[in-house]
Length: 213
Ligand code: SF4
Ligand code: SF4
Image 1 (cartoon, rainbow, N blue to C red):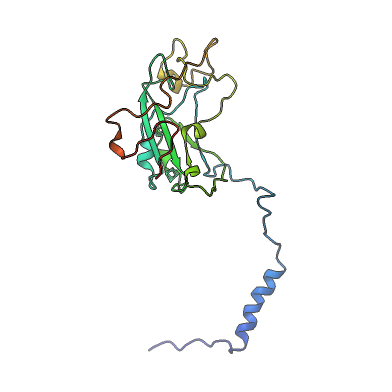
Image 2 (cartoon, rainbow, N blue to C red):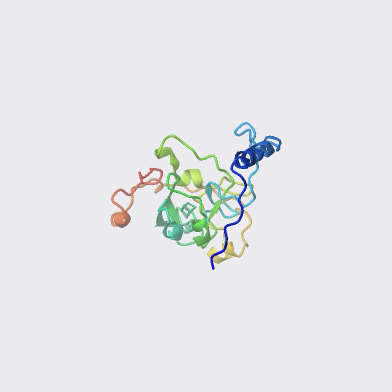
């Protein structure tokens, strides 16, 4: 046997019940935030703009492996790796990220890229003011993403700490640049991509140029 329908309130009470919600809200504390005049502190693990980190001596942690680009569901990252040489060394190991771009018109700040990075080269900062009216300006280049220099660092490219190897950097044995470390002349920075490196797209950029994706 079907259940009998429950007794409902008479029709005239319904609008009154609706206004009760309005009246209750009128006396609640206002939650208006005076942004941008008053900036709210974000949560410590907020996903904001990315940063490419350095080792304590200033060499770059990125090895140009492209794992971050492969992990990105929005196809927002473009990486082009290159070989280090003794005359021009950007990272302690064999390879470094010569071109690195993140397109913030695509990025959804999900953080999958930083999870994929094997060297902790890529992390996210708490900076969230990324809006811009130009699509080109939303493509951040390596120069914009690379972390600044802290005390004890010398800007890359420069030689590896004498007597150490790549593994020592990851073991935390290098804590600052060796005394007398000097920045090497960057002869290849900004060079056009080598022939054959253009397999992932028709318009591969030179370092510092942005690709319109
Ligand atoms: S945060 Fe997400 S969408 Fe943005 S670059 Fe990383 S993986 Fe791609
Ligand atoms: S940021 Fe990390 S995952 Fe991306 S290319 Fe560099 S080392 Fe590889």
